[in-house]
Image (cartoon, rainbow over all chains, first blue to last red; front, side, top):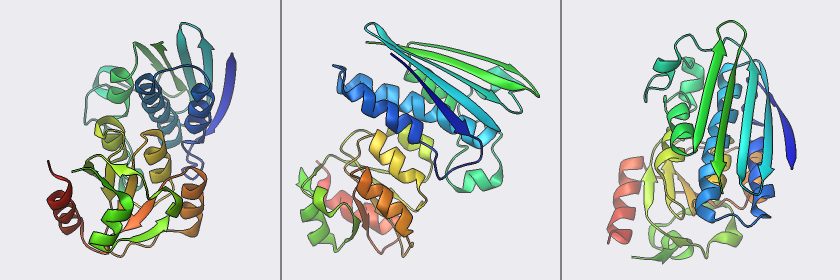
Length: 136
Length: 113
């Protein structure tokens, strides 16, 4: 099963809707609540990264009997230093975004912790591609 | 101690802003934070989330993490739009009317082991 969601950069009021939709779909499958919550965290953080940092993005989700694979590609400023971005506490979020409680520098570490495999590539000035998977 | 949202609401005079229908939920601990990713990373299902954030995204976080409720501190006003979303996503939002420190302290007295 393949699903595709468009994510609008800067639209905080719709943020999280793609993750919620996917979680609802996953609930119909026989997936343990523990795995479901891990997937939800990784989905939400990857969705929020597009909302908080990029102009727009597409989230592609593929659900197979063996697991879920998610690819999020965005058009945006990209990430200058991926190693630094992976550090807990590091964030380039604006003050406005921080005041909403985002930009704690925990998004990417949360995705890594809650997935079985994660790959992040970025071209500064163009965009970022994040892929992660969780095995069932 | 395991206690329902209803009992907590009565004991601590919380106001229920959304999710009246879900107040029979049992509370399993609590987490205090205004950082959304902190809650995403560290809170456990069934916990109450004490926060001063009142924008729409708290609903998605509470729902995705399967928290028992959100307690909004102080006299923070929550938009009707946020409460509507909370009803849709079965998220209970309570207001303590007190600062985060007092809110957490009172709650701790009741639910600590």
